[in-house]
Image (tube, rainbow over all chains, first blue to last red):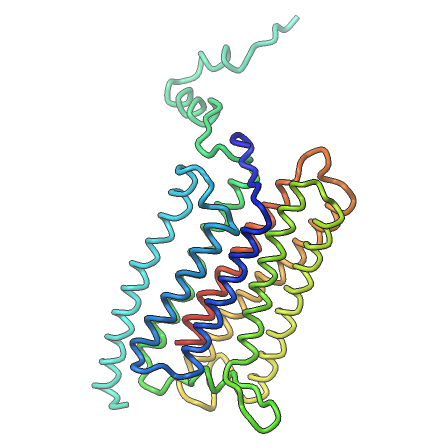
Length: 106
Length: 228
C-alpha cells in the first residue's frame, strides 16, 4: 500500500463527508436566499463555507490527507500563487472602475 | 562480431555535461511514491487549477471594473414554480447533483479496491449519469439565458461583462464535466469487462481524482459567481 499509493477507506467516511458537503451547500444557499446583510457578512460566510467544502473534497474524496508530504506540497503550494494574481487583478479592476467613473462619469 | 555495449559504457565517451544530464533524468530517481498514472493526473489537475484560477481572477477584475450595475444572479437564475419565483433553484439542484456524483464516485473507488466489479461499475455508471444530468441542466440554463437576450458581449440587465464571464466560466466547466462523463463511461466499461483484474483498480481512483476536481471547481464557481 505504501509503495503503490492505493487509498483504502471505509465507505462510512465518504458518507459522512457527503452529508457535510450537503449541509454546507444548503447553508451557503440560505445565506443568499435570506439575503443576509451587511453584504460583507454574506460574502464572508459564503467564502468560509466554500473553503470548508473545498477542504473536505481535497482531504477525503481526493485522499490528500493520507498522501505523503512530498506530494501534498507539490499539489497545494503552487495553486496558492493564484491568490497573488487574484489580488493584483482585483486592485487593477478597482483602478479601472475609478478611471471610468472620473472620465466617463458613469 | 560487434560487441554489445551497455549504454553506460558508451556514455564514457560523451562530454561530461551530456553525461550528467542523462544521469539526472535516468538514474531511477523517484520523488512521488505513488503509481505514475496518479502522479500524472495530479500534475494535470494542478495545471487545470491554474486555468480556473485565471478565469476566476479575470472575472473578479471584470466585475470590479464595470461602472454599470452587475446583474443580480439570484434574479437572473430564478425559476418560476407556479406563482412564486425561487432564486437560484436550478443552480442549487445542479450543485446537489454534482456533490452526490462525487459521493457515488468515492464509493465506486472503494468497491473497486474490494474487487467488487459489479458494484464498482454500477456506481461509476450512476456517477456518469449524474454528470450527464448536470450537463443537461446547464444546457437548459444556457438556452434560457440566450432566449432572454444574454450574449457574451451584451445583456438586458446591465454590465456586458456578465455575459462574457458567465459563458466562459460555466462553459469551460461544462466542457470538463462532459469530458468526465466520457472518461467515466470508458472506465465503467473496463471495470465491467474485468480489464483491471490483473493490473489493479488504481485507475478507478485516478478517474475519481479528475471527477472530484470538477466538483471542487464547481464549489468555487457556485460561491463566487452565483452567490456573491
